Length: 84
Image 1: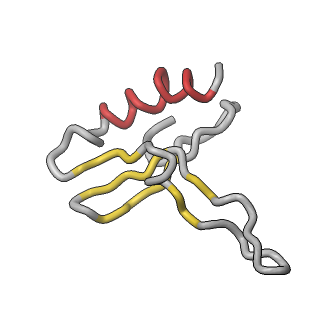
Image 2: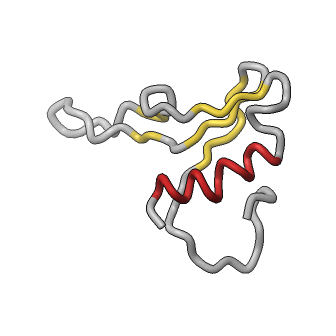
Image 3: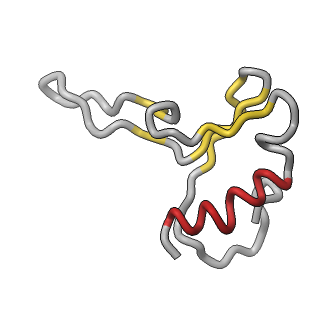
């Protein structure tokens, strides 16, 4: 399963089922430019490394509350935030 399939089949339905993007005042940010966390580490000579970009940012009433990263599925022994 690639990242796009993981998002569509696993992540998006769970976010929606938990009220994100449905509940008034909640929003799911997905766009690459909007989800930039940092401009990138400053390197010697003044350049920058690649920017750090989140897969999702969860926003409630204008406040960014959580960052969600989509990673390769692996067996877990516990649930994190009720989304597993």
